[in-house]
Image 1: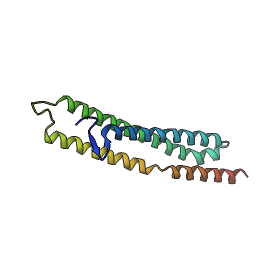
Image 2: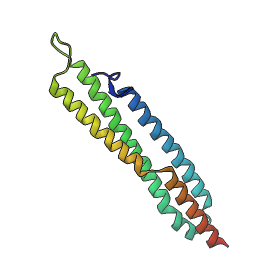
Image 3: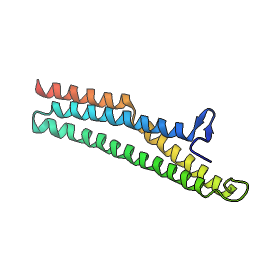
Image 4: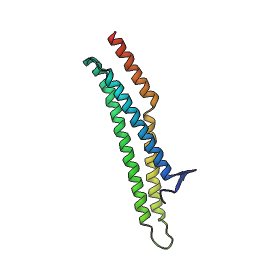
Length: 140
């Protein structure tokens, strides 16, 4: 199995990695925009008390995204190492090694999908809008 092996219909491992990286990078940019927007709203200690937990949540999501990218890198490294171990005349991995790689890949892909589904763009926008409404109410 190589990085160019097809794991889904029309999707190679490299394609999956690219999708995961692109999605995480997009989320990182969204989080940065939202955090900057929220920070600019803070004018009083009361506003800071309302906004700080939301910023904390966004930063936690950012850290989770980075953790997911580290998992992807680990999978890529395992595939590379396994490809280097190819031995014998058949030039293929053992069935056990294939099963281990596919099992790890499927488990990590499921974990990435779950983490991505926990962070919905609409949820972030709704939370920012709610804070804006609350701040508008507090200020006047």
